[in-house]
Image (cartoon, rainbow, N blue to C red; front, side, top):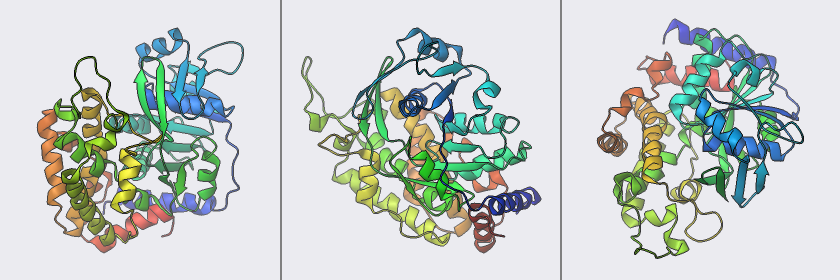
Length: 396
């Protein structure tokens, strides 16, 4: 274990003790970092609950697109309607290219988008955040909260903040220009770092009502079943290889049961999902985490249902490749890193990383979240567990 990590663990423990007892907060000022589909959905959901919302993007084209459209339009299930952007009168999402303007005074800061953008936000936020603010990784995947806390700490941040790691949003999204078609998602795991701040999650349910509180971010990290469901569907049958799902004749309309993510998963995909799940459970047990979801729960959470309102749209090829990239970096490599310390083989997980790298034509794994990149270099699993528990639970 590095000295830097030891200092990090001690600082996290001190902050947890100082704010151990919290009443359920009433968050009213929100910042959303990112201009993609997830960010626009989060901003609209928060505005629908009468929050003051500022959306930050460093990309002028994203902000211009928001401002020139009629706003963020939600259709489907949930709070449908059009949510205005930068309007002088009435409720409106404020769009900004100034990070300090966006986060100053915000009670909750959402870090949206792919893993590499969340990392960038964590690094630049170190000089901009203050005591009491809440940072929400949406989604955090595996080790997201630990990595974010580490990046904040080495960036010089001394503020006592709460990091929330969630494993999803309340809705699946299919974008058509400025319109987001949404379908409901079931419960998603969430935890705070440090732990013992469950009131924070209760306060966030105003905007993310499907959060299910877990004891620590170690639990939510190992409960991240996104890649183990998505990779067999995308790599073995789906649009990541450009083959799509069911072929529809020109001019035809797909049946609803054939036009959703769950339709990509047959018996062969289920078999691979089961093997991936078994490897994840084995590594989790080595780190003291048990009672992970069974495969059916993971399938429903990340593939949606075959029939009914809660179906997940099939991504196009570009979106599928983004899922593969984020899955390698944020879900599979972290598990492999933990497995190495535990001395456990994870051949099926490793094969998914290799396949994804071949499809993407890049060594994506090199950018993956690893325990050694946040200062954990010991090969003694007992010491690693103690250090991670010190951060996650706030006990030395």
